[in-house]
Length: 140
Image 1: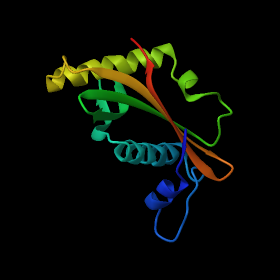
Image 2: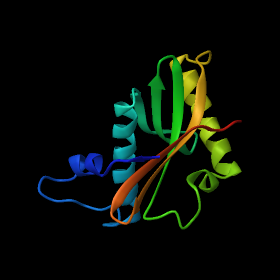
Image 3: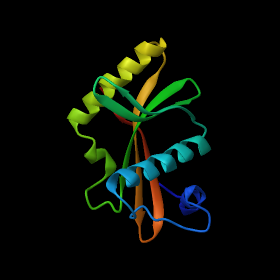
């Protein structure tokens, strides 16, 4: 787990700190996904796609680190009251992500490239932004 309130501040409008708690759920998700992308980039990932849609599904972030592609589901919230992020990615969601991931790999001719499924949680607790990145969070 990593504390990165300074990263969140760098994304906020100048002179104003916006917590994750401000605005609608969709704007919360957009801010969380922006933070997640920045976190991944700072940790050596190249962002290939964001909000990739196919087959009635979506993958929040598709990133590459070295020779491996990570399909990343981002979970945002104001606390961990609803449990750990991995528990919020149920079997149905995992299968949907896998289906979209396969469509992505086929469309890019990358079927032989190693890949994995990650979950990245962005939460605000006691005024601090916390990011937790679970690599290889589930298998299909």
